[in-house]
Image 1 (tube, rainbow, N blue to C red):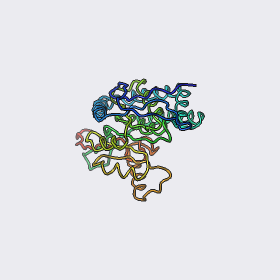
Image 2: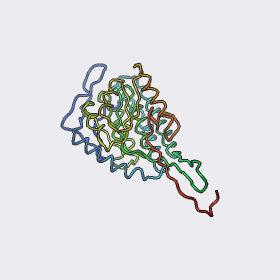
Image 3: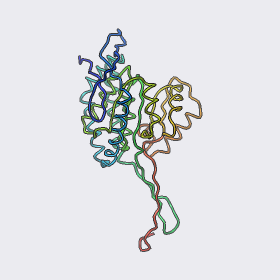
Length: 299
């Protein structure tokens, strides 16, 4: 059996530890598996600054090249499936067979989003004679993602793959109880050649991290999976940032919240697979322009 991996933060393409740690427990016997590094405020600021630089580079990578890098990451996950499944079994407690299946689902989601990233089409809008209106899709910018403990690699994949496919960068806060899945996912993207800063991974105190990152003007979208009360708490700090909601399945949802998320998923730049549109606003925004056609051009 594989041993439990050393959990680290990834900031600006560099794996690192932290002076502040907490134990990672095996839920079956509460035995310590390792130490979880907690990101400091300085680490969070560095991760956000790295994500802004990474976004400037990643958004300019041609879609076919982004697709190839993401497909390489999916291949790495498949090759490492046994190791990842054992890690998930240790910190989350699900059977190894279920962990293995979750890794395959994660790889399939990356493959889907990678291909959809090449189909972020714009459109031509009918206009008066002599004018042409065009709509292009542009990546929003830095995404801050918050993921739960119950699907340690599948849930982070929905957020990371969709953001990267759209040309965004991301700061992922993985689940502190089950950190190995998020680290294996981010490591696959890192090893596949995603530019440094385009993907960053942090752990720590969830309330402190969300309170610090969400109000930052550099964060253009937050994607969140959790309960309604936690979502409401995050919204208080959100300000004008776009959000993508994915509530806990056992919660009764306020009707307006659910309708807003569902309707928003149909306004995005991609089909509503709930991957690139992650149950909310897409990681791309429409950018409109109009131009006067040359009189000699065909109508």
